[in-house]
Structures are given as structure tokens and as C-alpha cells.
Length: 398
Image (cartoon, rainbow, N blue to C red; front, side, top):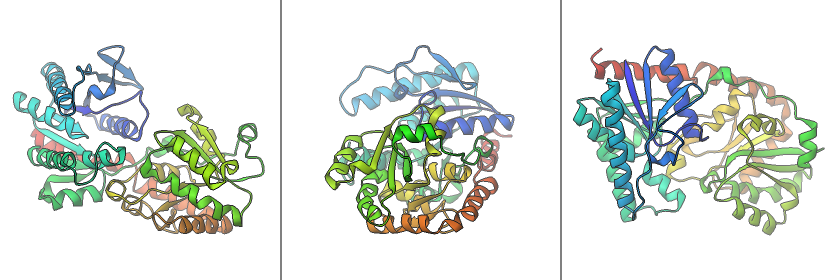
């Protein structure tokens, strides 16, 4: 079976999106399927029309000329459709598999109609909700309603819809998409790529100014929905009970300057270390500095519907964390068993959950083992990718 995947972007860019894509492709190949890979103009300018990274080759789509809102997206879709046709006419795929956003679904549908090839669409998040968080629109605006309509229309027109979690599946069903047309491919981890966390590198700890500290931390992108502002708001309450606590924030993003200003305004800047972005191969060294991870996502449609990868990766490494009780977290985390949940948006509840975890360290070994066992038995890519099999086989006539 030969599948042509159409992605928004891919390796060598690093994001939850690209890591999920790469994991799916490797596991599909392990099943004996032939996969081909194409990226949209959102990949940006590239050195060549075909690029290989980590054993995966990607066909690139050159970015078209920019334009006004609406015109730019139309040009992107036309360019993506043309590239799909070019690659597919040579490769003769059995299935076109478009991945979020909907800007990839419609080009795949146009190309699929020309080629007589079935199209499936994998929704990782709804485009309209992501746009709200990025600040490019607001909930209920004309643009929001249009993009929501486009996502629903694409879901109706493709042969089958995949989603990454139950929250997205339920939302699609509420829009009238038949239950037997939706299959969940849960977020997962490649367990063999993760090992239990090691000891903190004393030299790195000294360079970060964390000697003698109990370290609470976050590693990732600084987007508004991640709730790092709430984590800073909780820090004065934490310090009042535990003066040795320090907050380590590793990464960067659009909220970085706002977070630094907030820390200064709260009078806790001396207790916060902004480590900046670090090379991917160095990330584990920074994880090892952290005693307790925090995932304080705010409650909004995006976080209520979509499951993140970070808690699963933490469990695979036997790392401990507290997380807000948004829907995406509740679908992954067993409160008190594999992690600790607190009421979303409540800084006092966040601080109390952290203090409780730091005080009751006797529970840590059992929680670490339970988290690792959960990903080993339930949330691994072998189990997740197996869910494509029946749909692919039916559409390809095998």
C-alpha cells in the first residue's frame, strides 16, 4: 500500500506537529506500507525541491507570492494542489492523507478528484481555534465562522476523518459527521526512545544558578494557551511556603517578553530562570534539572479538545508533573496515579498542588512507575498507528 502524506510542515523544524508526523511515518513503514511525504508552502523556503531528514524524504512546495488575507491562503492551496498532482502522477499512491490544517485538505480533495484517489483528512486541532490563540481572530468573528465552516465541509467531503483524541472526535460528531467515518489515532510516544531521567549535571546546575534549589519547570514553546502567566502568579504563594523553590523556563515564543515583565512586576524575577531555547540534543540535560514539571494550560476550546504530547513524554521518562484539568489533560492523566491535576486558571490551586507533590515525595516512585506503564501498555505508536489499518485497507480495496 502506498500513501502520500500532505503536511503543513515537517522536519527539520521541531514542533509537536513534526514529531508526531515523523513517528507516524516510521511506524507505518514498520507495517510494510510505502509512504511518500509532501509539505505545504508553510515549510518556507528550502534548499531543494526534495530534502531528507532522519531517513525521511520530503517533497517541498515553493511558497507562492504573498497577498492579502484570503488571497494568500488561496495561492497556498493552489500551489499545494499542483505539487500533489506532480508527485502523485509519478508515484501513483493508493491514498492521499492530508494532515491539518484545512489548507491541506482542499488541495488533496482537488488532486484526489483529478487522480481518482481516495482522500483522508487527519485533524490535529481546528484551524479556527488555533487562530484565536495566535491572536489572528476572535471566537465568533466572521473569519472564525468561515474557517469552522471550511473544516466541517472538508470533513464531510473526504472519505474518512482521523483525529488525535476523543475531544476532537466528539466535536466532529456534534457537527453531523457520522461516527463510523471518524477514527481516533491517539497521541503517543515511541517508548524505546525515552529512558528514565538521569541525575542533574552539576556544572549546568551551577551555570543556571540552581544550586541548592528545588526546581519547578516547564520546557516548550511560550504560547498564551500554555498558561505560564498562571505559573508565575502562583510563584509568590510557593515561595512563601518553600523559599528554596526556583522556576526554570526553557524555550521561547511570542509570550517571552510578557512573561519576563510579569515576573518583574510580581517581584519574583530573582526566583525565575529563563534559559532560552536549547538544541534538541541538549533538552534532556535541562529536564534532569527539574524536580517537578508543570503544565498549566488555560481552559479554552483548543486545550479542552486537544491532547498534548508533553505529559506522555514526561511519563515515558518517569518524570513527575502537575497539570491543569483541561479536557486534553484529563484524557491523558490519571489524577494522583500518573500525574496530579489542579483546577485550570486557579493560581492558588496550582501552588497547592505543587506544594503537595513536593511535600509527599514518598509517592513519587509509584507515580513514576505508573506513568511509564501507561505509555508502555496504552499510549505507544505501535498501538496508535494500527488504527489506520482497517480504514486504509477498505479505501485501497485491499
